[in-house]
Image (cartoon, rainbow, N blue to C red):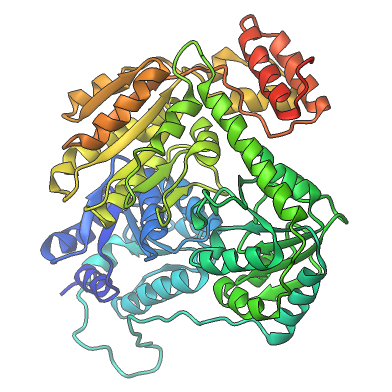
Length: 592
């Protein structure tokens, strides 16, 4: 048995189900070991970056460690974006990377790159080069354990000659040889009682309590609902926290932030007490103004406590357990004034959202197209969301069934994540339908490539449904609206134009289904047909590029900046009219 065979056998001991990667001579020995072994499954993506995104997606949907494999030099470099996605969203991923033969290191050899330097930031918790067979299993175990313990990516670098070296049958019991085991365990972190009591004192003193819920509160929906009920509070979520709570509840104001709802903005602007649960959302300008609200933060990660908002009480522990311990100490609020106000804001937002979705547009209304998915999304589906306009419409308009997981590249906010995420979700649960929401920019960046992977594999799935919505507006629209809002500059066509492409026809060329939607009325039947199909389907929705991607309750000064930018665009009137109508509806000022 060589080192490569031993490493693959060790991955089996760690119960790694699949490895995402791309072939190259620097990992040929590892690929040979994968061929000989009965697992893990090797999933070939069309590019190493997509392998790393898929590994991150596997970690997000399964809760397990994602593993990716790439050769030395360019292959290793291509992994970086997906690994940074895992680092910033705190997901365990192990990258196994080939390297030139150890005798050539430092000589300027073909494809030689200082891989330790390359990965030292993205895999800061653990990067190790294996130089001897006796080191290999311990290094892999440490990479796996560290990824699990720190929820971050780690990296194992294996020169080609070491992969081929003979693995000793038994490690010698001698100085300098460290034995290891393929095992790890997570601790249960319980907050100290004094922190729970201090949190209860602050919350009981509040009269207008709001909860900001993030991904770290996953699994605590019942406890959150009980806290809301006791305090007569309202709750909003971060983008990553959207799947945590049932958005049909009257006290749930939706997602907060730039891509959030008016109800969430009102909740944050008027609360006097804020309970932050498992959330480290970066949109600090959408939090309550400093000094407005007393704050309590619950998080299992001490480094984020007080990192985005001044908190009076920090509670370090598991969110669900901390809320469970907190509940008996809460006074039940019998004044329902604040509760009624929250319900009013929520109802107002739902009416505004319906109005926006029903607005007539030149092409299909993207808000309606995504909202309509709510009516047909199966209760056992998995959702992958790309970065761009699709993120906004997902955040504001898609009503997720309870317990349906949905993921997006959160802190890195990288385009091109949805298709590899969706593939990872599907391979993890081939009996469940998957939906990917993608803009045309992200689809051209990498999504078209991964449709090939879907076409290659879909007939192996128990449930073949994999629906890809492409929002085809010919514009990098999030960038265009950011340019108008933040820079006050008109849209720059040379930078933001997305060339037209026949996405539905391309899907059919690959043997998949393709449906083209050109007006809103066609969206309903498109979703119906897609979920009834016995194969993956691409819905190409030709949508209106003038639909604003702007924050809720936008201040007048910022609106004036947007208006100034649109005035410099030859075809900016349609977008300006849309902004006018949205702002008038939000404020009730119909004479603007």
